[in-house]
Image (tube, rainbow, N blue to C red; front, side):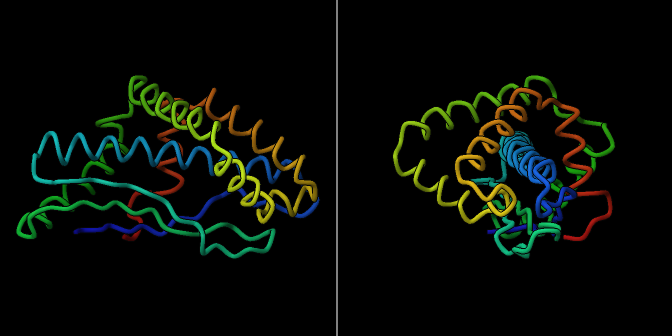
Length: 192
């Protein structure tokens, strides 16, 4: 197993009494999740299908270790992992980092088809989860202990805000949003 781990920090910061700041932070989180899905798909294409040297590829974000107080930026990691022959690991790390560079400089870009595929997958998974009681219980519990709840101080208002922001991000996300998220989260020359 090989894992590349990048420190990330969100730019939007929820502040006490400021619903717009909670909305901006939620939107950034939703954009991050869609971007990570697109990145994973791209790396599967490049590392598995083009290079044929990996068994699996995954990408994920984790901001669970962020400072909980309002007014502080969320921090965490974005990880890219794959399984391969250990003798090929260094080459594949360079290919993955190279693909990130190509996405940043525009020599390869996310396409409308990439965005549509990610959003379709997002919608399908959401429709599936939406029908399950455990998803609702987990979502409401997560929101209850979230920064959004600390701002709204009402679980109904938090759920409504979460729902609205998710819908807005999913309906407006495009290739430019993906690029802007990449540049904000993983700027050129960032550590890994």
